[in-house]
Structure formats: structure tokens, C-alpha cells
Length: 141
Image (cartoon, rainbow, N blue to C red; front, side, top):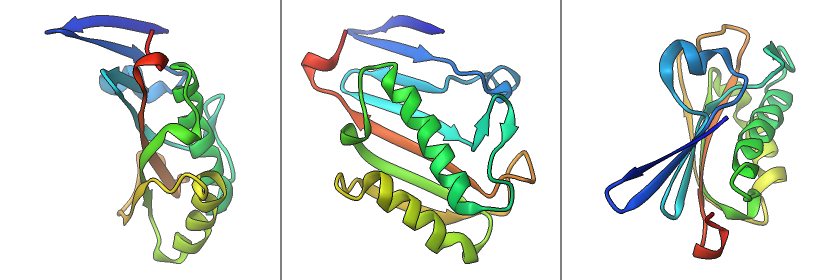
């Protein structure tokens, strides 16, 4: 679902995904405002099921694919990403998550942050990601 609203002079567009947390918590999967598109924390879920249980690399690849799918709704891809944030529950997973990030964004080289956190709403999740993208005037609706 896509929703648009005007805020001052800028239009704001929001898209939802099938994540049950969006409704429970009350947030949008992605929000576009002007030249920025922000994708919320994205877990490695497919059809509501955690993918790659116990495997941080698979979880990171899945989470990035989900986040990029939200960007596609705005006509954007990995090449438009300017910032990534990766949250992991264990320091031992940094290398696997970093490898997944490099495979997806290595040629793009966005600003990136990787943080170790105490956990997520689903204890099977090892990785959650956020991305931010830049869109030019020609990419806006």
C-alpha cells in the first residue's frame, strides 16, 4: 500500500509491506520525503517467517533484499543507497554481515554503520538493517 501526503511544500509518500510489526507498532516500511527515501528497520522475514535461522549471512542478505524491495516501490535500487545501518546481536557475526553488505553495496560504497545490540523483537533474528537512498528530481513521481 502506498500513501501520499503534503507536508508544507514537500510531498511525503509512505509504503507498507507485509510485516506484522508495521501495524502493531504503527510505522511505514519506507517513507519518501523530497530527495530522500528512508527504509525502516528490516528483518529477514519472508511471508512472516524468519529466514536463515542461526545464519547471520543469510539473514543479512534477506534483510537487505527486503529493504531494497521497499526502495523498488519508488523506482530505486541499490545504486541509489547513500547510507546503511546494520544491527547485529553478536560480535561474532560482524564478518558475515559485512560480507553480505559488501556483496550488495560494494560498488556503491554508502556510508555505513554496524552496531551490536542486545536483541530484537523476535529472538531468532540476528540481523536488522536500515537503508537511506537519494533520488533525483527525475526519479520522483
